Amino acid sequence: MHYTEAEGYGPLPFDPFKAIVAPRPVGWISTIDRQGRRNLAPYSFFIAVSSRPNMIGFASDGFKHTPRNARDTGEFVFSLATLPLLDQMNRTSEEVADGVDEFELAGLAAAPSRQVRPPRVAASPAALECKLISCTELHDLDGKPLDRWWVVGQVVATYIDDSFIKDGRFDTAGAQPLGRCGYRDYAAVTEMFELLRPTDPGRVVR
Image 1 (tube, rainbow, N blue to C red):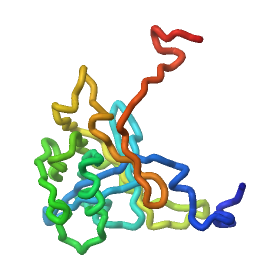
Image 2 (image 1 turned 180 degrees about the vertical axis):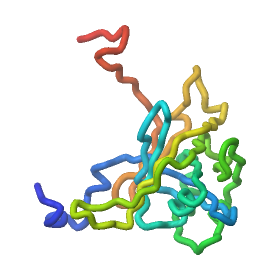
Image 3 (image 1 turned 45 degrees about the vertical axis):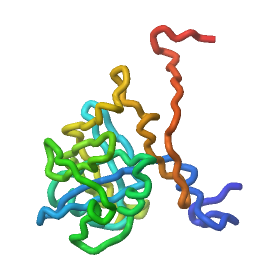
């Protein structure tokens, strides 16, 4: 099968794009608005975009509360969405009116951040406090604005639950982070394996 974007997605009943670019980490983003009201929402178009300095980014379909708050206040927090928090994460995906507190809606406790004003999800095993670098509307090949917003923040502080640190490393498999796949499908990281690069010291080439 081979098709162009102009042809839709061939004989398939659903667009496979999100299933092919998968799994994607869930960007569980908390913000506050100009009035100081809390907001929490998950974003499936989310990724690390830089290290040294550490930066993360997420994309929003429409100028929703989260990108607006991040732009207006210059801050946001990423809390790691995990398998034990699956139901609460899903509840915060609900589209609600301005001023509705998704922490309360999902029955989640909030914990204060150290360097920014938005709180983190207290039950999450890790969180990244971010200052805004950019909030940009995306355009297509013809230069048409799409009402899709790309938000990038630089990490200014990191929180890790001490129980998820093993031998000086974050226990990713123990935390069971969620990944968004296509359609309504999710995955969870429950086991890991190591793969050394050809240039890594001590690697045995077979």
